[in-house]
Length: 262
Ligand code: ZN
Ligand code: FE
Image (cartoon, rainbow, N blue to C red; front, side, top):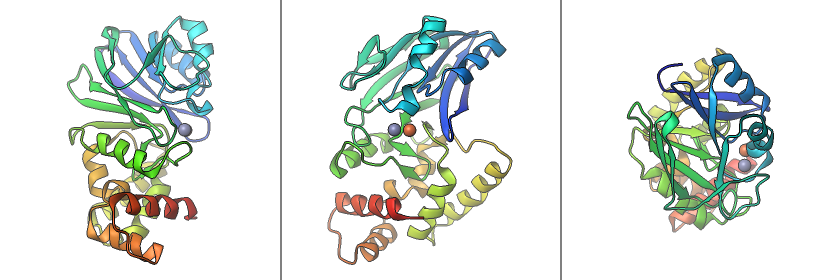
């Protein structure tokens, strides 16, 4: 691995641990387990420089202590959450310099799924923008509101939606097909959504990750990014059985709809 690579390492049942590697160095995001990361480091002879955490859930932090003990890598995480290990506590406005892998990342506060959830946004050495958004934004979906309000989540998703259209979206789970199946109920007439369903179904049938996504793909197909589209807000109103008069109300209805969707 001489060039920069961005790899989703499958972990647990449907998590991805993101790895960026460059010239023999690597960083990982949200290691819910240590073993799959250790195997990659050994296989490709990589030095782990840093472990980045987006939020405190066990499926994102469970491997952090073991990986730090094994590699000595520095651990970065959200300032306001309780984490098993954290050397650098971060909040919006902070910058993480990772020269070993050619990354400079800016921290965004994106509360809603958890109260202190953060995202890491920056440019890789290849020049492509990318964002590690944990369980806040998924392909065609978003995280459940365990510790936040709909208003907080709408604001957090708005920060992500405002990133450049070609930003690679590196999320924490392979939930894409289940999310798309629901999104097609919300917006059956969306051609981009139909095409995405076909393309992603093909990838999954081959066992290939559907991620990273892009901000542009989410703007075209993710109902949670499309609350201002008439087709989406009308569908939400029909589901709620009443008019919904704000973006937050439409969002809250969509989140409830998705929670109940089987
Ligand atoms: Zn989570
Ligand atoms: Fe998770």
